[in-house]
Every structure is written in C-alpha cells, then in structure tokens.
Length: 207
Image (cartoon, rainbow, N blue to C red):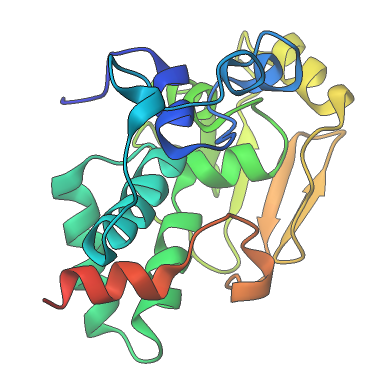
C-alpha cells in the first residue's frame, strides 16, 4: 500500500500553516511552523509569488495532506463527488470527513489522523459491532464506531480523550465511557473546520 514516508513537518512548512499531522507535538514549541515558518528546501526563503494555478494546486495539496490521502485516491473521491447531487466541493469534503480514520480522530479517540489510521488498520475499532480495518471505509448515518473491548489501546484512547484537544462536531455523538461514537447525520460545510477553499480544487480538476 502506497503512503507518504517522508517527514510530516515538511508538509506543514510547505503549506505555511499547521496541519496538525503529528498530534500533541503540533501544540508545542517543537512544531516546525514555530521554528522555521518558511517552505522547506534550498530556495525556501526565496520563493516567488504563486500563479493562479499554483494557488489552486496548493489548496488541493493541503486537503490531501490534512486527510492523509494520496493523489490517485483523491481523484477517485473527486469523481465520486461529481456524481453526487449538490455542490461538488462540499460533496468532496463530506466524503473525506466520513472516512473511518477521520471519524475516529474527530471523536477524540486519536491525537491525529495518522494515529487513527494506524489504530484502524491494526483492527482496534469496530463499526456496528463488526471489526473494520480499512481506514478509507465510509461511515454512514446511524452507524456506531467503537473501540473493541479486546483492544490494547484502551489507555492510549483515554489519554487522548482526557487531553481534550478534539472538538466534537455536531454530526457526531460521543460516549466517552463506552468509547464509541454515533454518526447522527452527514456533516455540513460549516461543520468541517479545515482551512481549505474547496472551490479552488474544483476549478483545478475542471481544467
């Protein structure tokens, strides 16, 4: 399975903002944006002004990196969003939000999407009572995501929930005692608090 293996902090520096890819580290002075807030590379301090295409590309790259999705899979999500009724950009973000690894992170069970992806892939979570180990699984309305009772990650999940960094969106309902989350409805655009202009992504792929 293809995945990004390079330094995660380079991605935040390239986009010029915190993408919160490394959990607790992003809230400390060790965060790369706090120490070197300029693009990585030899010419990072001397980059020129972005073109219109460059601005669109950066928005697409930002969305990909926030959700931990590579290019081929991101294109499939965009094609799926185009086939759905409604606004394509909002459909795209809604699909990304409904990924199982993102739902686990949004519920506060994991400190980052990277950690939640690993937890799901290792079989620590179940959906409606059945173990699901596919991070890209699309969670539907009414489904319950819960930490398995036999999981050895109980203490880790407790630490993440006690840290209180996750802001539970309105479309999710979380029971911290049973470590489970209920998908109450589909996320609206105002519920998706990520710094991405989805319309620029639509314009990029529509060329």
